[in-house]
Amino acid sequence: MPLVTTTELFKKAYDGGYAIGAFNVNNMEIVQGITEAAKELEAPLILQVSKGARAYANHTYLIKLVEAAVIETGLPICLHLDHGDSFETCKSCIDGGFTSVMIDASSKPFAENVEITKKVVAYAHDRGVVVEAELGTLAGIEDEVKVSAEESSYTHPEEVEEFVTKTGCDSLAIAIGTSHGAFKFKPGTKPQLRFDVLEEVSRRLPGFPIVLHGSSSVPQELVSKINKFGGNMPGAIGVPEDQLRHAASLSVCKINIDSDLRLAMTATVREYFAEHPADFDPRQYLKPARQAIKELVAHKIVDVLGCDHKAF
Ligand code: G3H
Ligand code: 13P
Ligand code: ZN
Image (cartoon, rainbow, N blue to C red; front, side, top):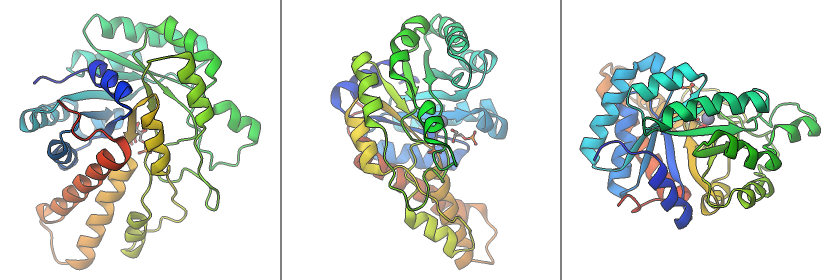
């Protein structure tokens, strides 16, 4: 099976009340850990590559790793550009074999976001590639922001119909309280996503796939393990998994997870070196790290996304 777009994946996810995991990939062990879990659970997958990943690992290496995963698993896999920052970055990925791109112009004024997204959509659709766009900014609500400023960073539901109609984008990332990284909420506060915003967006865009970025749940056992073995990550808090599961049962069809993979890999490598201080063979410490990613992704697929056994 060749790489797929998200069109069919999202239609089935929307109708079935589940979401597809979009996991960031940066090297072979990460690709293998994610795809081995998905293969065992027959889960559809989105593997996403950021600008930073392309700078780190090189476009060609990443695309060949993902192609290898398609051959090894036989799964429907979409290769997606995460947070494309310009038309040129999107064009380079479209020309280079990606089946989906995100144009992230959410920090620009509405009209400018529409213009750049429209341009990417025209280029992508002519070549059979789908486009994710974003409205609203994922401000860290851990910041010392005033309520009004915090409020203004959420997606404004009254803008979504005009945005989707004018741009022709295929999916929309919205801001309902998630944020990137491991420090998403103030320690001591109760994390709560804005389901009222999600529901109003969905009411205005019936059947349209919604995307959540910044959706790592930052498992406390991983943070504790990192700190036990020499790390220092005070106050790391993520999005509660039950809230993600609820979002997946609504219109959210794509849930982005990167930080949790990093935590799993780092905790495992730190533990390995604490127990084997004399080792220096990368295969010895990357093997358990790859296994930790596999276990984490299996848990996400079954307990958070609900997309196990939905590949075929
Ligand atoms: O949303 C950002 C992703 O976690 C990718 O992060 O730009 O460091 O590769 P990165
Ligand atoms: P996390 O930092 O919560 O994993 O979010 C990843 C993401 O949104 C990638 O685009
Ligand atoms: Zn993101």
